[in-house]
Length: 262
Ligand code: PGA
Image (tube, rainbow, N blue to C red; front, side, top):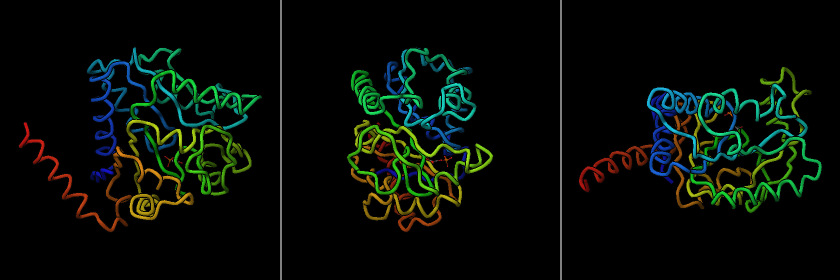
């Protein structure tokens, strides 16, 4: 795992945007896995800016979102479909037909989830999966105790997640109690995972994810088994990392090695 510590949220977002931009320029028909939440907003703002000002082209890109609240229609003000539209898709040139988001209204949930997995396969798999981390250690809605081999399915949200997300709904009662989410097995098949965190509130879970044991109690820790993970955070989220000096040293050495090999 490559751990990169940037000075603040904006620098973290720029660094993440550089990685996504490099992929799209190298592979115009890239498949992006996308996340909702407050963490990737800076990344999305930067991708929109690069689209507008530098012509970053999404016309051949395909996207798959991680999750959606169960019971919410795509047009619902708090649905993740709406979130993605407002914060990214309405501002770039990715065609509607290439956008994939789990359905919050599926009646035959198992069949729908299987079809989502097949769609990912048919698109050739995910090149970069963007991820945030929940305060309970989840990625997507793979709550503590989720099988680390799980596939797309319906999950019951933890009380902690409901409480964290009440800020978007006004009260905990209004937060949906279930979500359709990609599984840990689905996420681990992405060719690269790009996980982001910022702020002091994430410091403990960030250290648990990177330096703690691999455990279904912190599902993000399963990324330790993935061969290509880039974990980018700001200074405050990095504050409890024990091997901070080493991560910074690796960054400096990586730059030197690249220069030497040029
Ligand atoms: P956040 O959510 O980006 O809003 O902190 C992260 C998550 O719950 O996965």
